[in-house]
Length: 356
Image 1 (cartoon, rainbow, N blue to C red):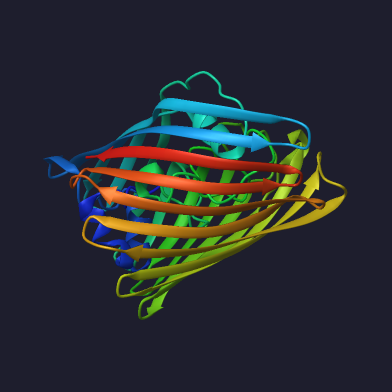
Image 2 (image 1 turned 60 degrees about the horizontal axis):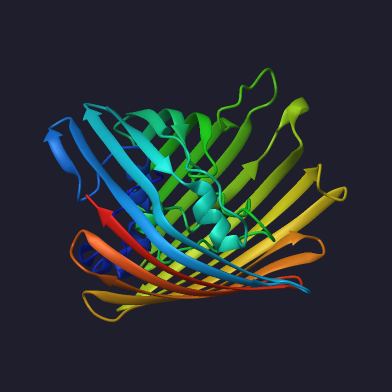
């Protein structure tokens, strides 16, 4: 899990929806285990545990030029258990995860289902923090780019904003640690209104083998009341074993006012290698509006689009009401209309998430 903030689907977190992006720096600290979530179970002064259980039913009706198809799914999407520790200036986290990536991504993007994934150590990292706000983190961790950087328990919707034509999400979902994870070192700085992080890493569990490290530079700025700015750069040096190289620029902003939260994001990817036509520049954008109806209910509206290739776009319109059944149990109902070239799809999903 990237940074466990709790769930927008629960009563406790619904009350925090309009403050979500104002607390982006806190999210950064949670991501590296510097602090635990408010719902964490404290074992002792040095160790706490939190996590979530996520299940869903979904139906995807797809229409292509000459064929139609209907896919349904019912089951457990993800279970995650997180151990957060803090001893003096050293903190860390171990995130144990059972994630059915193929199920969730495929139904959202029109593909088929696969067998359940195995239990995995999603993240494992430790951080040494100096009194001046400088920190060094080493281990396995997720990207800090992107607006939708939470696990299912922390999203405003069931599905993510970006996708492809068939059976997976998109590289524009770079913040999705269930699909994208790094192993490396992060040098960071956290001040009153500014957070900076510089990561040197390799992708996934692959070995570097003498190739150049990938680099990610990210920032978060909260110096303007009710406004949060975030983004950064990803420089991809895949080396001799790479099928392709993808450099990415990401910028996003969110503004809160009363019961409203509005957010926007823009990304540009420079793809060079297999599957690209020379040097492809692809872009993506997302707009989201979220309204807190009551202490228990909120609704999100999202419009997103990304280029799958220089000749193919993925467009998506999503409306997602959510309801807090209890402080720990929340539900989302999502309706999404997806257009990919000559392919049209309608997604209906109901998701239940229990956080602890």
